[in-house]
Each structure stands twice: as C-alpha cells, then as structure tokens.
View (cartoon, rainbow, N blue to C red):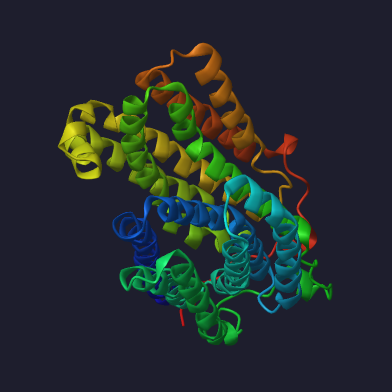
Length: 426
C-alpha cells in the first residue's frame, strides 16, 4: 500500500512538473513569435530583414547551448553531485572563439553591422551559460525549477526586445535590450540551480559505490548532443527550404503555411522528451517505451485532429485564402509527428552514450534533398510527400538502431548502470 501511494505521489509530481515545463515552453515560443510580429509592423523593411536574420543566427548558434543542456542533463542524472562548472566555462569559451572567428564572414555575407554581430555573439554566450544551469535542473529532475528557469530566460530574452520595439528603439536598441535582459536573468538562474541536493529518492550510482570517480564530462559529449540538435533543425526545415527553391513563389508561400502544422506536431510533445531524458540516462528500462507511447499517442491525436479540421487549421495559420489546402493538413502533421518520435529516439541514444546518434537523421535529410530534387515532381505535393517519406524512413532507421543495439551501441560503462532515480520537485 505504501509503495502504491508513493508511486501515485511520484506520478503526480511528474505530471505537475511536466505541466509547468509545457507552460514555460509555450510562453517561450509565444514570445519568440511576438518579436517578428512586432518587427513587421514597426520596423522598416531593411531593419526587419536584419532582425529576422539576427534571430535566425542566434537560434543556430544557440545549438551549442542546447547540446550543453542535454549533455549536462545526462551527466547529472548519472552523477547527481558532479560539478559542471568546468564544462560550462569551456563550452562558452569555445563557442565564443568560433563565433568571433566567423564574425567577419557574417558581416560581409549577410550585410549586418559589426555592432549587431557583436551583440548576437554576446547573446549566444549568455544563452550557453543559461543552458548549462537549465541542464543541471533537468538532470536533477527538478522540473518545477526548470520550468521557472525556462520562463525567466524567455522573459529576459524576448520581453525586453519586444518592449524596445514597441517603444520605437529600432533594431540596435531592441537587440541591446534583449542582450541586457538575458544577462540580468543569469543570477536568477544561478539562484534556482544553487540548491544542488540530489533527488531525495535517487539511488547512489554504481560507480560511487565501487569507489570510482565519475567519468568526466567533456566537449565531445556536448558536440555530440549539439550536432544531434542541429540535425533535427536541418531535417525539420529542409522541406521548407526546398519548397522555396523548387516551387513558384505562390506555392512556396502556401507550403510555408503547411509547415507551421509540421512544427506544431513536432514540438508539441517535446515536454515528454525533457522529462524522460534523465530517467533514460539512469537506464530506467521502461522510460523509453513509456515516452514513445505518449509521443506516438500525441501524434495520432494531432493527425486525426488535422484530418477533421484541416481547413480550419490552414485558415487560422494563413488566412481564408489557404483554407482549401486543408486536405493536406494530415500529411504535414504526420511529418511532424514522425520527427517528434525521431527526436525522442535520438535523446534515448544520447542517454545511452552512443557517439553519433544523429547519423540516420543526417542521412534522411540528404535523402530528402536528393529525392525532392532528382526524383519527385517539383510541385507542392511532390515536396510534401518527399518530406513525409524522409521522416518515415528516418524514424524507422532510428527505431531499428535503438531496438537492435548490438551493431550501434558501445558497451555500457560501469558508472552508467545505476538503478533508476526517483523524481523530486523543489
């Protein structure tokens, strides 16, 4: 009876933490969409293009931060007391060096002022530092604090930027406000992550019981996680870029409306991946299967909903002119749902210590480009079905790698075989 009560209590805490993370992610995405909406109304065309380019560059460069967060989450799940200050510092230094070296090329090729590029580099470095702290909270399974950190970071990055745009500060003033806001929230994130207690029900790692030192967290793990995130971005945006190149302007615009549904189906269940990653890192045998079941169910519901209300979905996203394309909504939703499963499988591989888990995703993106350019007709439906086929093939390949691991996984390290940790929210 006591065990059943504890299980119910743990499930309730996980549900509460997951709801909080979902709300924080929704807030972040909403604020991110608000910035270009305000820019379109308040900035001249040239500055609007520069703002969109700046936001895209930060998103790409911040992949280093996402990789750092994932790597730290896995490491802290296995070693709750391990310090991560060194890897956070080293990742920030390497990222800053690479971005500084690339700055002259960015200035020349994208026609951005040097001051703007310098602010973008600084903003990216702040995001990297913040991501390290978020990774600690995720790995320790303190999901309420993780949600608070995500919300605070989103407000710091976007609220100041949006307010500056609304007040007429212009491009440079808005970017400066976003940078200052991101810097200001760093101490808040430090405070949230300061309590470094291990989860109250966490089991002691096997390596610690054997008197062994935890395996150090190095840049290789960060690069592996970051490259997986970059592969996900490339794969999920490849069809949009292909449509831009292969279709007439009007059809390309219509296709971009459909990809909004793809992104919705892709990112809607990502809270499941956030919650499952620490458990998968501690080799909880049921966590991957449970997470896959939840993400698959979410995808089925989204595809079914788009089949029933596809015209409404296109109308809401693009306006009445695109409502007639509603019959294609289930295809776009299915593509996103498959990539959601692929992203979860890649996280599972990262948790198991696989060195290059995103290789099937890179291969799928390459296959999409080859098929869409050389095989499929250069039409709206040609690109659409090519994208779905690539998503299906990629997800199948990742599933085969995950469930037939002998040909893909290294032998587990002794320090990675600890029993599953419980969840504590603080």
